[in-house]
Length: 483
Image (spheres, rainbow, N blue to C red):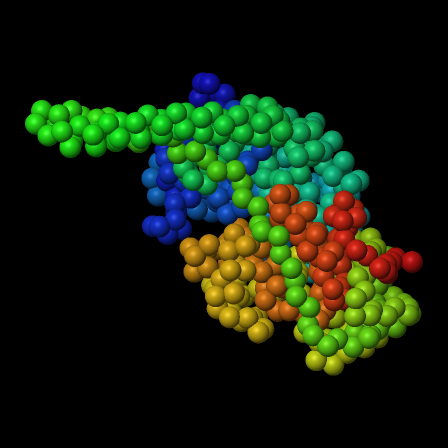
């Protein structure tokens, strides 16, 4: 590929957050103009870090990140920056441009249609739900029509209709697009290549084809490397055995033994460092608080936002000690707000049994202290669990010793989610409150999480926009906030 065709190039890029944990070690890859590529790799491998190097948020320690002259870049971030919360929708989109844009209201309406969100242009960003804010962030990147569009888990807060709108937009997008996502069907609809960040070698490999074909290619390569290593291992052992025999014979045979040991050592060097498959979390159980009352929660009223107005609705919903409730309703109606007030025990129109321990999983991870280490975060919620048991739970969620000493704020979104689930196990809650628990989670982990939630023997409140996930969980009651 000529330099003229390339819009982005990484040349021997090295980057790490600490000496012991490199993210990239001599990464080389080229992205041509108009390419639509998936960025793949395990949770915590450093996919979002690659995006931050492209946008100049971070600089490489060695090597170069080269962008085509005057190439524009836009990224759809996952969390709304605090400084944007007081802006109106119009001001928020105006802030995406360096100069005044005429007819911006028409452009805003068109791009909000793509992300399946209808919003008053005078409404404050802070008044939108977390899911709606994520859609605004996605729209803010799309509206710029940049030369390089970076999308980090763009389907997390979209329903099926929203994903269909976004897919149609990206199929017709005539510029470069790099996407981090675990949604194989979404990726296969418009991408035609993969950049694979290997968490073991810290290099980036390029593959042509869709998500499924690349997974097959990687599996075939692993199988080939395993066969080669098995063959080399057999030859190495044969040489070592012969070297031991010759060494005991003494005299000139010792020189032969030495050469054989050297040959075995050379073969050891020739063994390929085989990539391991993405690991999945261990099956787990969330223990329930003992001696729960017959009724844990009773909801008699709640607030809903309908057509930008707060409406008080009366209901009669009781949650017994084993009941699982699915909370449904359109985006922005107030599902997350209701869960937050329940978790903080400040919800009007709700009575909660005394001394109930609450396990709360928020989609924005604000239940975590980003300045704490993972170790401190897990210690802070332990209930009746030893340090050894806590470390065993952490290991089951792929939170290794290195990760345990890392601050929560430095983790990938997927790793933060795993910390959240580890906390739920350690809390031993009497009430589980879950707000979009599949967001940011590797698709390999989701069936294991669904099984654990379905088997939870205590009361549970769940908000999820993923029907396939909900269908795997025991649901006893449904509260539709839109009715």
